[in-house]
Image 1 (cartoon, one colour):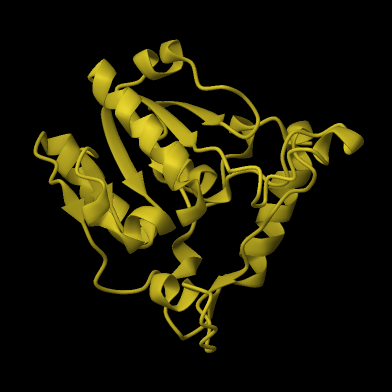
Image 2 (cartoon, rainbow, N blue to C red; image 1 turned 120 degrees about the vertical axis):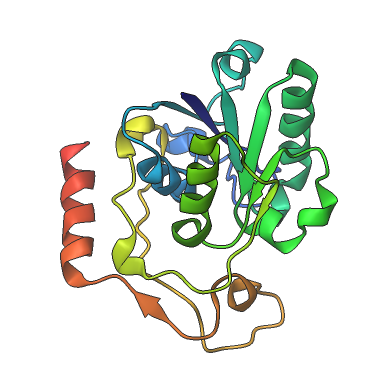
Length: 211
């Protein structure tokens, strides 16, 4: 199985720092941590590539290479994500979408073949099992919060670290507060959950090993 993981482009007005990155010889602020973590949850024997559209362009040959295109995005990336979905549909390539954008408004994306919503640790295993059996459903929704101690180390080798201004690590999810501008509580709940110290040390060691 060949999997292409695609991270849509940020508009120039949000988080891209597009016109500032050149001053430090970098292309984007942070790598797509969610997709790198999802990649680590996929079967080890599958071939995987990642295209961060904030770093490089997405070519049709990239899409044609894949059996499935996995897309994750935040709400601000909606326009770019929709263009990727349309391109995949035009080329006859199946899409799997998850992350904040699709979890928040799955009904807005009827052209996506499979929606794996909520936290990947909860919903992705069911999708993979159904895919193995040849009968994947269209929507997989979470009915519980993930145990972060089950979260694997991100697949850092799928990105060029020198393209980014900094690396990112996720220590926990969930927030007890209720800021009106933030959707974190809807995505991850109100009870903070965290990884254990050994996990964080392993992730830091992995980052160091990959440069």
